[in-house]
Amino acid sequence: MKDIVSQVKDIAQKICEEFHLELFDVKYYNKSGRWFLEIIIDNPYDYISTKDCENVSRKLEFELDKINIIPNKYYLTVSSPGLNRPLRNVKDFERFTGKKAKIKTRENTYIGYIKNVVDNIITFETDGKFIEFKFEEIKKANLEIDI
Image (cartoon, rainbow, N blue to C red):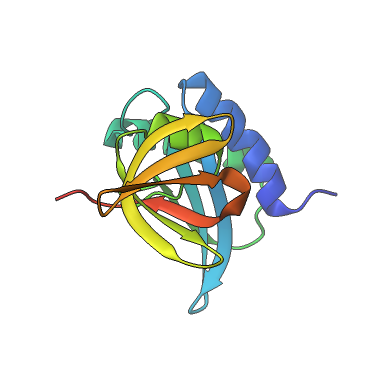
């Protein structure tokens, strides 16, 4: 039998597709004796609006209540990946070309701008220098707020 997160992912994925959105992540956890189901959605063409979150939340709540797979009382939240969203794949780097980001490799941490992405090679500008990374060399990356 599938675990709760896997089942919720399947349901949330279908709901996101109905609204032309992408499912970014699902988390189910206990904090201070309370259970939380956190759904993170994304829009590959625009920003996530509060209406997007509301639509997914209402539909997901309805579907989860029908099948009753979560044994505990829980708090459901639906949100966007946020301003400092993780960059998890080459497609994310392509989408956010020109944006400020933080990249961590095994050796260093860099803050700068994503300049180009070609064949899994990310060109990054930091402190006036251009550095190229193979996607596989990046341990962690996220967008940074550009003030």
